[in-house]
Length: 166
Length: 166
DNA sequence: CAATCATATGTAATATTATAACATTCTCTT
DNA sequence: AAGAGAATGTTATAATATTACATATGATTG
Ligand SMILES: [Zn+2]
Ligand SMILES: [Zn+2]
Ligand SMILES: [Zn+2]
Ligand SMILES: [Zn+2]
Image 1 (cartoon, each protein chain N blue to C red):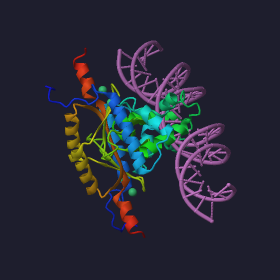
Image 2: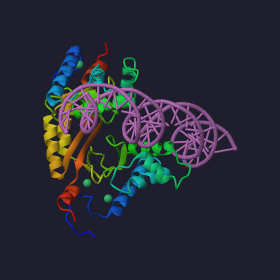
Image 3: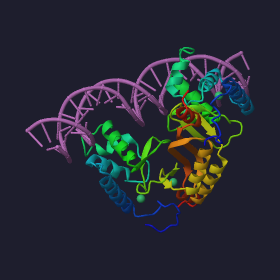
Image 4: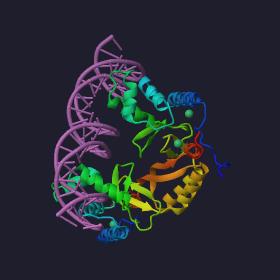
């Protein structure tokens, strides 16, 4: 019954490649834009990319403290502000947490699928949804600044495991 | 008074009617469901409905304290939990704030248009968006528990005022 | 070079948002 | 009247986020 479903991209993959690509892209983007991906900002981005889960600001702080004794909340929040501004990460509003952006390069709108079991966050372009949304918003005479589309539930991988636990 | 042309549904309307209807509906729903819309919960709902803006928990607390000296954060958060559970209000994730639900009766999915200028929150059924979204999510093999679709920007009313200031 | 400016970071304090834990009271049923 | 479950009172604390001011750093320029 579920054989035709698109599998979650995170089920089995070379995550080191994710990280490498994300950091390479980030470095490239920052050079192009003439903004500084400083060591702190780079490290925070790297920590965020350790997984596809959304990570909380104070968890980042805990992770960075051993490396940077001076780190304080402001250290983290400033880095996060920068990374968000540059579109390198997303803030997950419904979790007060942060996740790497997989498509910083192409700047499209994002829909986030957030798994309540494994906590991975999958970002999807969802062009049809975005089109319908644009139409709806247009109809309302509303001018968009920012969209947050966050869907909570159970991802395909976790559902498969639940139905077929190894 | 109420004479200029403004398209937003909240621009000119009998807000007392909004409140009356919301409270009536809430009372009715709670009776039907056999749950208790206690005085505290009722008051919190009433305060939330004072406007179409999203209101913060601690602002509610400030507003309710003169009436209930014993009120503490837990007082408010418990009432909010109840109201959300019953679908009588929405939590606006991107604001950490709460807004009355205009359609508690029919339980459909909601899209929130949040004006950054006047701070009113407009709830729209957006059935086309929801249909496209359901399709997208189905394709991803994802099982939905909860959706948060929050669009920030400038509402039609504020845009009209900006283009045509008195 | 010195002066200036913009950017980034250090540091301390505090503000804001939310929950935990346990006691007490209320309401309904028996 | 007793007991159970729901709701509230009360205190404390956790978790999230911002402000303000000081310092450093590098680029620009008079
Ligand atoms: Zn990966
Ligand atoms: Zn999962
Ligand atoms: Zn109204
Ligand atoms: Zn507005």
